Image (cartoon, rainbow, N blue to C red; front, side, top):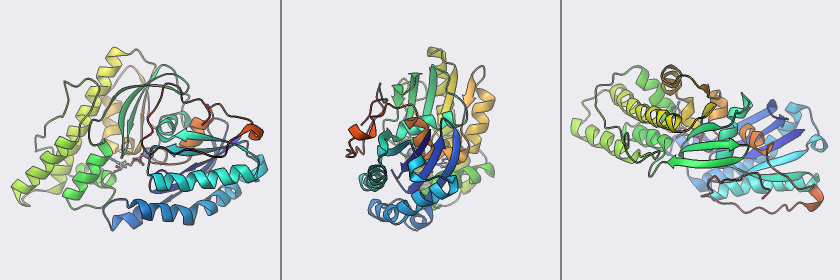
Length: 335
Ligand code: KG4
Ligand code: ZN
């Protein structure tokens, strides 16, 4: 079974072709980071326009790379939310048109389910599993009892972890996206500023990163430039990772799971990867390689493999998009 998938929820235009569960035949990612570096963040309208420019060519290039024809594709998968509505619509229209013209079934995939299934690209998910999705828009702790069945244990009540990295980078006058830059800077710094660990021992499995970001802002103002960015980066990052590890350990204590999956853009963070492996024991941990952590279409195909689909002659090619789509107990239904 070949699945062709399309992901355009934010500023990455991505197409992949996956054979069955994890044989990746092609993965194309066009990132608009270079464009948005100049602005310090994503401009939704500009992102949509760039998706339009790239998406058709990426579908063609993906088929060429996989050495396949459209008729070889058994299923098309596309991200329908959460994300930027304009960007999502470009991917949905391109994927629907491709599926309709070639008489292929199509399935709409929740971007967050995609992030979780990025783990299945490297290792079969062993249920029950605990997943932490840490990205630019989400910080969600999720319990997964079987395929496509998700129970949200906790989430950020304000900024997502990635968002905090991006905003702290802005305070320090670093480029966008802030995560990778802070990751590198922190390696050269010392943890000399004692930032609070928000929600550490209260608020259950929920997170909060906006106060931490404000603490960084206030400290930088107070020090009037008399600090090393490396030290701020290192101290901020340690505060984020301390909270993340604490909450994971709390969840592992309460829920008896077989696997821990850490996914999403922030899962690329080198210090987090190191500390999770060193400090969390007696459980199989799956953290996908970086190319599967940040937004990519391979993870969308990986989730689609486990979704129910309609035969193409009963297929609707019209999709609703939902910028605020959440994970549900049953993501296996067709949209
Ligand atoms: O999953 P993703 O590509 O897009 C969303 O769905 O949001 O995540 C992007 C986020 C950005 O906030 C970026 O700064 C962060 O992931 N990120 C990192 C690293 N690489 C990307 N954060 C910390 N350390 C990194 N190495
Ligand atoms: Zn994402």
